[in-house]
Length: 168
Image (tube, rainbow, N blue to C red; front, side, top):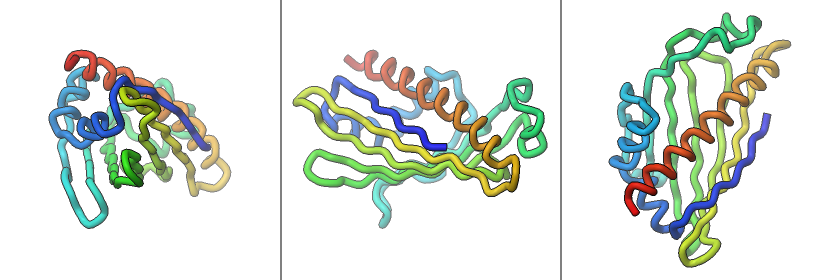
């Protein structure tokens, strides 16, 4: 499953990247989302680029999980999200990320791009691929998780807007 979304922010690309590479920004965003069980596994410059690696416990509402997928999921599992940001050119930024959900046989990977669309606005494009190596039910598992991934991205975007709104 492929997911592509575009988001617009009333900040320059440089200003948005200042936020996306600030630990306090994530702390504020998690507070808005009501998430308290997380830790920064890695945060800062590395040979890869600027790394934001957050690990948290994810509670899964098993009543929303199709029966064929329940044997691959737990009600509580570790969610590891790793972004690696790089300056693409000028005021354009590119990031790669990977998400791992416990021992779930699903790969969630993607790219995100941030660029100015005016002096005071930028656009972020997110491209995600959700796939599974499990025969027969893998595509169904990936499709079910892709729906959840889209919901999470939207919630993160709304929380980001609230954090940015507080600051202005």
